[in-house]
Figure 1 (spheres, one colour):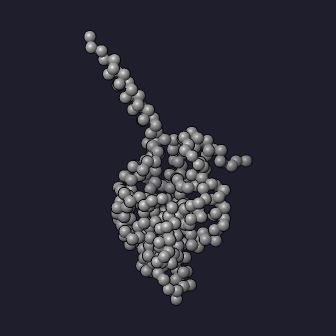
Figure 2 (cartoon, one colour):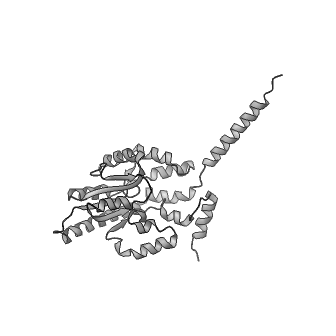
Figure 3 (spheres, rainbow, N blue to C red):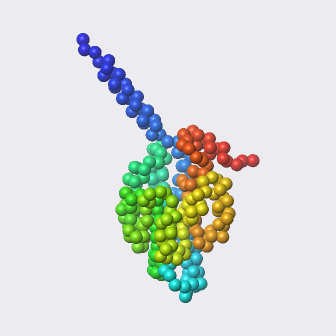
Length: 264
């Protein structure tokens, strides 16, 4: 009689590995649901976005009045994700399916070109462009996501989206060299972003909660004048600062979050 034991063992191993893979893909991101809901449904989120871009217009007009005789072309730098494009649909899909962030799914989402515009963003940037201000989109999306990003921005009506103005990540995550490349040819009037790393190198170097708060304090006069921040409670360097260095499991991250909370 022919034995089926080897096949049974192989099948058992395959099922076990497959099951382990499926389990490993589950992510504990339920804690993000409130942040995603706030981003997608709150009138406060829309109001804060309108407020940020209204302030940006006021500051730009103020610069024109104060610098009528100053030479040099003006520029405005904006981050893309959660600054002009709303990716909460991607975050919601991850939360619903209990999946972690992955480069592949992010690239797929980026190249779908389906992100929506943050309230007030298109209008402000079109206004800036109409006044001869060059708009630069500096993002840490990668080269493989550049075409989809450009299509998304253009479809929503954002102005002057070209290879020269859409500056994606090509090596490290720091944006400082790209900011400097703009500063070499233009006078940067405003920078807008949802992450302090979008504004200056000092923030990129600040990795801990205390050092980030200290950097914000030291640069407080810039906020609302040259730096304009948009809210993003879903993800960002603020969360990385909570977790600290090293790779943590979902359980360890949950412990860190609770341990960091200040009660009474």
